[in-house]
Amino acid sequence: MKRILKYIISFSFLFACYQTLQAQKGTILPSYLMVGTDVAYIGMSIFNPERSQFEINTSLDVYKFLLSIDYGLAEWNIQKPNFTYLNKGNYYRIGVDYNLQARDPDQNIFYVGLKYAHSNFIEDFSYQVTDPFYYDYENNINNADISAGWFEANIGMKVKVWKGLYLGWVGRFKFAKSVNYPPSSFENYWIPGYGKGENDTQWGFGYQILYRIPFRKKPPFNEKKVKEEK
Amino acid sequence: MLFSRCETTDCITFSSRFVSVQFLDTATSNPKAIEFSLITAIDSEVIFYSDTLSSQYYLPVNTDSEQTTFLFLNIDNSIDTLSLIYDKKEKLISEDCGFDLLFNNVEIEFTTFNKAESLGNDLSRLNEENIKIYH
Image (cartoon, rainbow over all chains, first blue to last red; front, top):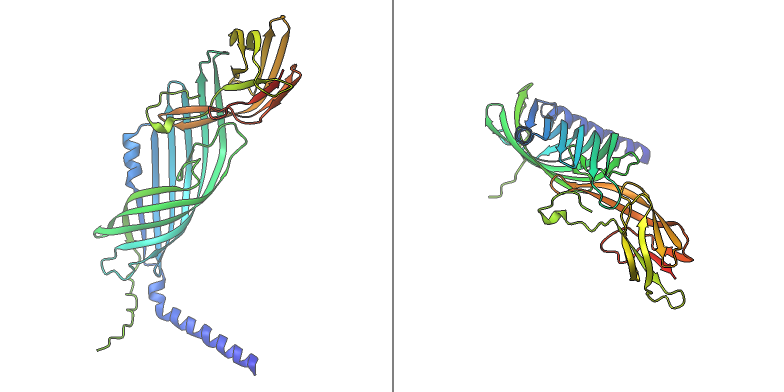
């Protein structure tokens, strides 16, 4: 008898979930894709001839969540009289944001999220030493096939400025970094998408321009039932 | 050792290329001044010390190698050697500060001194001594 009761309760629960999903179907399925780029990186690439970086940011809405994928390319070429340093690679971020303003009629987005990020890159370091005690020499260290992974907790905002055009900012706290570095006497200096290799945690900020490409009209989310006591 | 011009406090480094060698009395373990006609190293054409009397010597390692052999010419014209091995690391501090060479885990490879020991530490301006030689 107990077993039958357990089945009935389980079935009722599953049926209730299914009915809720059916009712909410219109708000769950994606209604738009947002595509953008980080304008700070574009500015840096224009004004700093040693550095170039380009990043594409995408997100797809699912219910109140945003499935987010970013991809970036970065190169840093330092040329100094006694050393040169080249870092070249790519990176991606993948994760989920939660839109805290999903009911906003103006479709502005205020979100928090968690992402996994990964980078593949190379480092090439050459230097010259003028030694007053022994002899002058040059050395070159080339480390290829370096990879790094880390997590990012982020908070950000995307504000509608005109039709589908949005401006946004994002703050990222990067943590739990692991680097797959070849045996080398040179210490990893930079990780594309992360920052300085010696830092166990890292803050990052982005300023984005984005465009919203709608697929369909999304019905409004159910309003919260508020009991008004008179 | 920093190889570039530094303008900010972030460029401060405590790394060093100098190994600190302390001579101690075998019986008392107190510092003992030892006289040498000269001190130099294999691969170097520079005399680091000449006609010197001291209990502590600061000797530059070869930064292009992970091994340096120092030669101590005694006043009786006999020669003692001290060969050190260490790990060399290159570290880029920043674009403006330049790079740093680090020498870690200094150990004695061989020596003709009767008794010598290494503290196994890094070459740093914060470490007072790296090698103890009992004489």
